[in-house]
Amino acid sequence: MNIGDRIKFQFGGQEKEGQVVKIFPKKVYLKVDFPRHPGKIVVRTIAELEGKGPEPKKKKKQKKEKKERMQRAEEKKKDEEEKK
Image (tube, rainbow, N blue to C red; front, side, top):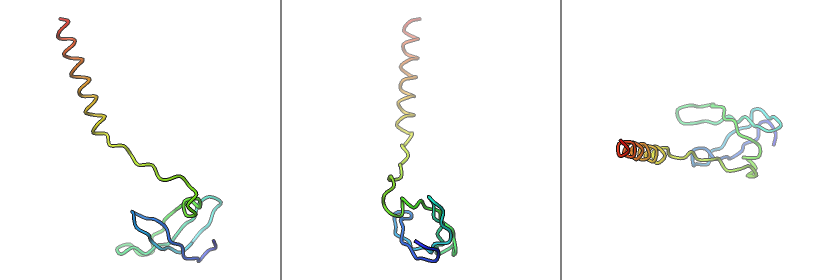
């Protein structure tokens, strides 16, 4: 991998192609032409481009956790009312 090389990488579930602008020991800066933002610089790890890195983690939805907390709070209130 050298400066000026064209590399394909994953971006938003699609495969994009970018030109290498800068190279560091663990990261690569790629110049990508998007429809509404030509020349955008995107940073990727070398491991991610080579397919050796860990898969990106997806965030959990907080709705379930919030519902569980609300249910526990309601149960706690009912228990307190029963004790009185």
